[in-house]
Structures are given as structure tokens and as C-alpha cells.
Image 1 (cartoon, rainbow, N blue to C red):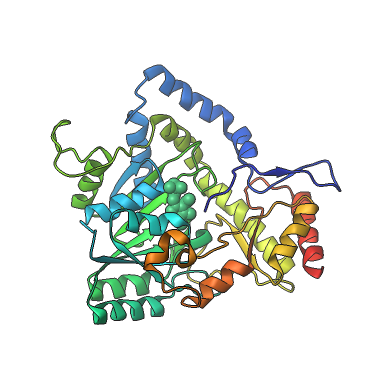
Image 2: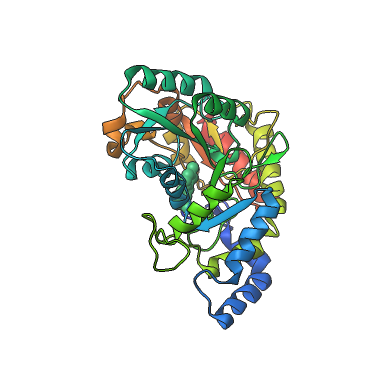
Length: 389
Ligand SMILES: Cc1ncc(COP(=O)(O)O)c(C=O)c1O
């Protein structure tokens, strides 16, 4: 999911612009704490792996309950590191939903593994576990690839079906990686994203539920040996000595300045999520009779990274909303199995019909914690009008 973090457009009916995502308002609320944190870093000068990075990792451990947290440069690297640590590469199959942001598939392909695209559920947008099971079997029957891992994506902020995924992966000997780039702060059966799979990754891209002012990411695990390998890989594959290179690695550290910002933002992550959840509830109540509104399953809640409806004539409705000054976004206009870069691993058009249909019907509405009531009312009225044509 990539969006311009502060898409501002003017509403002809009002002088006040509507933001798709409002980083400026959040910054205004947190300015003092962020300034104090940043000044401290500028004074101590430890810009790479300074004390704020360790402090932030410890705060993430207590927030999620994960025994180990290793931060890194971005959410894509977090996925790549998770796969590299297992020695996954050529000849290995990594299963993942086609209806996701490219990073999920990219991480598998870039290390030479084969991404195997899986269908998603039409209402929750989450990986279809029955289809995943069928594709593991098909892969074993064919015999060309070794099934090694699955990356389950918590799309738009809602955790995937981790009980079923954990059971299936244990039975099949696959590593389950939770791509929680969009779901930091969400819960599944009362347990937070970060401890729902043996390995979880997240992103701190500015528009994510916990976003920094640049790029950042993290891995969560209860497995000490894995965490040690993640630390090694994020720092060029070094061992105990800085110049002792024991494996191939990356230069993938979270900047100290970003950790400082994230420490300030972590204090409000729950309040912000509650505000986004209230906005989502208001949208759903007001739009359920004219659009397919998001389905959040009873045993979990969403971090509401995005609020996506499904509608007919999506592109027309989007254009009408743009004319009314309401910014929207499409996550995602093309599923990964139809992207040119992944053609070598795709069964082509028609092979994943739910993902293909969703890519033509979804439309994400403005979603952030600082939306004013009158803006929300304006957006809802504009969406209803645009859908009515
Ligand atoms: C589902 C998903 N996975 C992975 C990523 C990659 O995160 P990053 O942009 O921090 O590399 C993103 C975010 O953009 C995402 O939405």
C-alpha cells in the first residue's frame, strides 16, 4: 500500500481541503514530544543504532508481547530478512495472496524463490485458507518446487485467519510469516499483531497505523535464534565481531531519528486506532445500503489502515468524487499475478477471479485519526451522491 501521505485537494463546495491521510494534523498534536525526542538525538549524535533504536524495540516488545523485536530499514526488508534467515531461495515455493502490495511478492522473488499466488476472500480481502491448502497440494503433486513458507497479509489492517493458518503450516512444515505492514495495533482473538504467527513483519511507512517520517520496519518473533539471525542480516551478515561476515546480509537499519519519532507516536497509537475505528463505523453505517462495506470478522478487529468499499462503476465514482474534492485511492488496481514483473510465476487472467474482481471494484475513502465530524459528513454525502450517479 503506497499513497501520497498528504493528498490535499480543494472541495469546490467548501474552502476546507479534504485529506486522504492527514500527517500534518497528527504532527501538530505530537509536535512537542517529537521535537524533544529529535533534539536529544541531534545532541547525542548516534544516528545509526543509537539508544532510541533499542528503546523502541523494547517498547514494541512490551506493546505486542513478542519476546524479540528487530527493527530494520522498511517493511519490504523485514519480509526479505525473514525469508533469507530460513535459507529460502531457488527451488522453494513461497505462497502469498495476489491481492496485496507488491512488496509481499517482491520479497519472495528477489531472493530467487517462486511466489505462488493464492486467492483471497471476497468480503474480508484476506488469504483464502482453503485455496492455500489446495495450492500446497498442487505444488507437492507437481514436485518441481518445495513448499517452504506462506506470507499472510493483514490487508487494510485486519488480521488473517491465524488459527487455521498456524495449524495448516504446522501440519505441512511451512513457516508462517504474518505481513502486518497494515495491521500494527490490531487484535485477533484478543492477541495483538506481532504474536499471531512464528514470525511477523511490519512497516513504519508514514501512512501505516504506526508511521515514521520516512521508511522503517520491524520483525517480531519469540524465537531467540531467529532474532539473532535477523540482527545479523540487517547489519551486513556480521557475527560477533563487526568485521566477521558469517552470512550474506543487508544494510537495513532503522535510523535513530526515525526510532525517536516512533517512540513519540507509539504513545498515541491506540487512541488513533480508536478514532479511525469510529470513522470506519460511521462510514459503514452510512454506506451499507449503497456499497459493499468492509467485513471485519467477529473474532478480530482492524487497525483500519484503509477503509475500502466495493462498488460498481468504480472509476466513474472515483472521478465524480475527485470533482467534488474528495480524494480516494485504489488498493490495488491490479492483483500481483497480473503484474508484468510477476508474469513468469502467474497462471494468467482468470486464474484468481476474486482478486481480479476486487481490483476492479475497490475504492478506499479518506481514513485518518484527525477527521472532523463535518468533513466526515461531507465525504459520506459526496460518496452517496457519486454512487447514485
Ligand atoms: C502489505 C504490505 N506489505 C509490505 C509493505 C512494505 O513496507 P515498506 O513500504 O515499509 O517497505 C507494505 C507497505 O507499503 C504493505 O502494504
